[in-house]
Amino acid sequence: MDVARGTGSGRPPAVAVVGSMNIDLIAYAQRAPGPGETVIGDRFQSGFGGKGANQAVMARLLGAKVAFVGALGDDPYATMTLENFARLGVDASGVMRVVGSSGVAPIWVEADGTNRIIVVSGANDLVTPEHATEAVSAMARVDVAVGQFEIPQAVTAAGFAAARARGAVTILNPAPAAPILPALLAVTDWLIPNEVEFAAIGGSGADPTDAEFSAYARGTGTRLVVTLGSRGAALVGVDGRVARVPAEPVAAVDTTGAGDAFVGAFAVGMALGLPELDALRLGIACASDSVTRPGTQSSFPDPAAAAAILARIGRPG
Ligand code: ATP
Ligand code: RIB
Image 1 (spheres, rainbow, N blue to C red):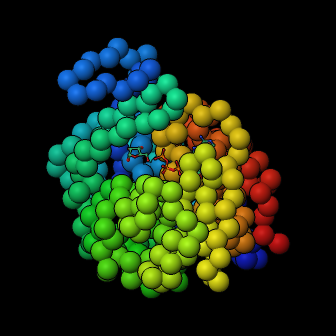
Image 2 (cartoon, protein in one colour):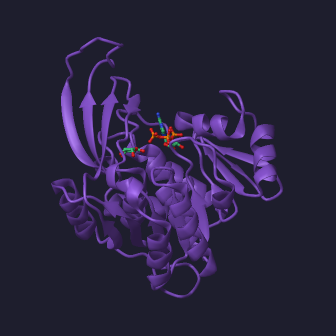
Image 3 (cartoon, rainbow, N blue to C red):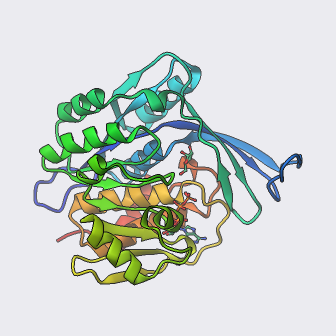
């Protein structure tokens, strides 16, 4: 299921993800319980998650060559995660093993698709900067490197620095929201928060304006995309102008992992050399498709559907 780059090289784009792996434990209920309350749920589903793993899998489903850097524990969840990567063709040679539990994420999804997530990091917290540097440096090629905030930021910074030294573009999804370490910002080309994360890192209100997006990108010296849920996403151009692209109109049943589908797909668009707005459209199309199905990675378009989306958005000439 490989797709060739548009650079004339005929090679699939190479994406490195430095990030987290979790097992998602998802309870679906009409509404989430309040403090001290118990509600009876409708359904339960477990599956593969973690922002890093989700973004890696979305990139792989679009045909990229994907290599993962992170840490798993010594429990059955670790074995299951490695089997999932092997089945999909994600290179896990950069995954280190530690003693203890792998990451887990209990998730509540309400009837309207709204989710609430608790991440218990486990092994994700124990990956080291030295390991990230070594693993990224050992990769055959890296066109784009992707990171999030579910592993220590110093590790992502080390992985990004190694990727940049090899000419890669770096994309940081600052999720869950936290202040960004200057050392990480210094090696980040693109930032992709959602609106809530943007408000936290950019100090804006709940409904940020184009002027706030533009000012933040100028201030950080990075490129900026902000995902806006059912309203799509906004991209700050090199000239500071903001383009807003609407989401595809769909009936959302579960938005868990939608942001990850967006980031993984946008990364492939960039690695393919698509025009930025087409990379944005690719992200939106994959993410909007994913919200129509339950689960996290299980909601992503399959390889045939992902290839159809890529063909619809356009390939580089
Ligand atoms: P997550 O629920 O995974 O935490 P997120 O908050 O990181 O997602 P959002 O900004 O909510 O990210 O959504 C990412 C993308 O998913 C949007 O840009 C859009 O393309 C798609 N999306 C999310 N919700 C909807 C929806 N209700 N209808 C259509 N598309 C949606
Ligand atoms: O973005 C969704 C992801 O957040 C889930 O897969 C969960 O594991 C948490 O990392």
